[in-house]
Image (spheres, rainbow, N blue to C red):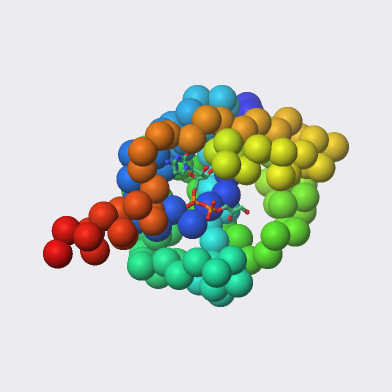
Length: 130
Ligand code: C2G
């Protein structure tokens, strides 16, 4: 039984998010998502349209996602990996190399991002349509 973890904000959910969740789940049996809290997003300089509770509800309805836990800090990853007995840490390639220190605790895999879509692109495209 392989346990996978990935992290993110997952605001204004789109097919790029679904692609990474699907591919992450295919690497094992149980997928945990560390979902950025509203406070943590603010500290990343990112405001989410949907609240944490809304983003959590949406993620929990996706068939690839088994569990959602809060992400409150940058440095909780090692304890999350230990506490949840995680085998593989997965992130999109925009984070390539950024979490390599986790290789002491589990396998670290960066998957290619889906081209042409992002939460910020949705926001600017909608603004430009007016
Ligand atoms: N993603 C993707 N393709 C896209 C857009 C996003 O594969 N077109 C991936 C990202 O690479 C990331 C995940 O979807 O792995 C979630 O993306 P965001 O919600 O933008 O998450 P982010 O703010 O990067 O949070 O500790 C790390 C974080 O909290 C990362």
